[in-house]
Image (tube, rainbow, N blue to C red; front, side, top):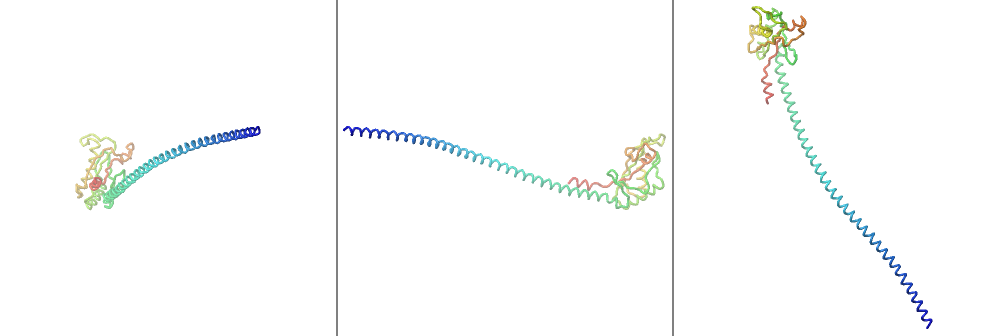
Length: 257
């Protein structure tokens, strides 16, 4: 009997020891499971956050893509508009060049008649001066023509009569000396310069030139050719110039178009 009791005690002790070992393992497994659950939860949270960030990035990317596409479309629109403006400007430039060429040809046509008439022409200060065979200069206070000058005027008259479409402007000039007093005095240098231009025009008309081809103007002392401080300069300034006076109507008509 005593032996049986001892065996029961041993069995109970062994059972108690086995129970204690199983609980420890259970606790360890439970703790491991809880740690795994926690890690899983953290991982799932991280995944959810990453998915949200990915979604946000996609949304931002689409928005940026839409913005860039809009800017590209605007740039293309601006480029097309610029191309259109350049094309319009080029057309205007082409038209302007054609107009300039037309005007240039018209101007050349206007003045070529003078150059082809046999007259010696000289361009000075944007004007076309016609040279006579003798210089149209004068003594101080005089507007009379010498024999050589009358012959030169007669030659000019022959050219003008052969070219009835040519028109000239005769300009009279003086030096800076004041006109002398007396019964035959001129009021001033304006009047003296006008007398000088009129003398040439009247000589041309005397030689058969149509008055419609002629015009006169007195410049006084306002357009000196040389320095009035010297004797030689004053002599050069006492002169008459023959200037081409073309019909500018065709040229004006072009500018109105």
